[in-house]
Amino acid sequence: MTVAIVGVGHTSFQSTTPDISFKEQMFEAAVKAYEDAGVNPRKDIASFLTAAEDYYEGYSIFDEFVPDQLGAVLRSVCTIGGDGLLALINGVMQIETGLFDVVAIEAHSKASDILTFPGIVTHGLDPIYNRAFNVHPYFVAGLEMRRYLHETGTTREQCAAVVVKNKQNALSNPSAAYAAKMTMDDVMNSEFVSDPLTRRDISPLADGVIVMVLASEEKAKDLSDDPVWLKGVGWCSDTPWIESRTWSTAEYARLAAERAYKMAGIKNPQKQIAFAEVDDWFSYKELQHIEALGLCENGEAGKLLEQGNFSRNGKLPVNVSGGRIGAGNLLEASALQSVLECVLQLQGRAGTRQLKDAETAVAQSWRGVPTATGCVAVLSSEL
Amino acid sequence: MSEKVKDLRGTRLSAADLESKDTITFRGRPNAKYAWSAGIAYTKYLEELKNGRIVGRRCRQCDRVLVPPRMFCEQCFRATDEWVYIKGTGKINTYSISYLDADANRIKTPILVAVVDLDGASPGIGILHKLGNVDIEKIHVGMPVQAVWKPANERKGSVTDILYFEPIKEK
Ligand SMILES: [Zn+2]
Image (cartoon, rainbow over all chains, first blue to last red):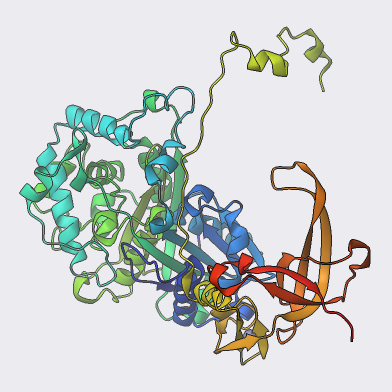
């Protein structure tokens, strides 16, 4: 694969943004991304992809509402009904066809506009078998967490340590919405939502927009001194039957990673990957995803995290950005937030949280309950 | 379609079957509520409607006036530059006479929907509204019309603060 990210732009991530519309937020992120890439969208970008889920937006056929603020009027535009990483992967494939040499990717969250978030999530459950019990939809995470802890011997304390780490990491990310100095007790003593899942195990929703510019090899070398190359990608969905899943392991992530690693020539991820940004919608998901990506053995992530292996100064830093828990849960855009952190780190633009000598990174996404769908991308500063 | 379909056994359900008590049915209503942030441009537009005024934004690069206002120009891809107040008069760009309401009920008094190109806004930048106080037979593309406002104390910052557009009587 010979596609690179040549520009990124984003708003800050905030718990609420009542003073500004999603269109105005998107315009801000797009202007920054095009400036970063040194392109004029009206002349240089031929195709635009946005990641959106109509139910999150409260608009039907949401792609109709994006062209103006992306500079995409009367151009090729489409929406990917998936997360930002799936949109990015589709952008990569559009470039690989040879039809386009520069494309733009957009993902956003205006979660603060949603008044009935649990109602929206519940609507993703099977209407006849799974909606009959009048229960908050995060029960699905409770079921999964229980089985994951049971099978792996991971403890609630180890999950709480994920929250403490990611909130702490976010303190060095000026864009993060939920940075905090939190103690283990703060997490362990927060109220249960769906036992064993507590309120602090859950990433809080936030608003924000991220835009990226992708380019073909030739164009990327022309546009950028330090393009970030996409070395491998994969995406995967498990069965929609929540009753029939392998709860203890994230199979969708494991298989997506297998494909991405194969494409990227990664044989030993623990040695070849310098750092990772993984989905942490819930604390235990970070541990499960670390294992699925082969960054440690199954069932070992909690123990290694407690020992500092995945801390910012650890052997294999995970979610230096703060992840969903620290930077904010940006719905479909958190996937691009993970990619954004990889790009900033690989280009040496991560400020006070900059990692040393990082050359290859992995970004992984999950679409939240009740899905078992996710994407993986391997990124590198070297072609 | 395959001929074999004819051989498939099954029970046809009629509307009456679905209503009857011995048919298993499920009903669900999505709980989907939103409070869309209006943002800078929509907010100013709605506040000015409450004041009985129509405001737009000018892009100095293409010299267009956009109504309702937008904070960026979709043609030039740049931030727009200034607020511009325009009059409530214009010409009908296109119109339609709807004999169905939003729930698809047939209605006796049709709803007259129109896009009006306002004087002072750039060509092709229209606003959507209703026509009123007009002889249906006489409506035509290019007809000069003017906004009829609700009384000030009834306006609340909505596009319905304008009741409708009516023909301008020729002097
Ligand atoms: Zn313009």
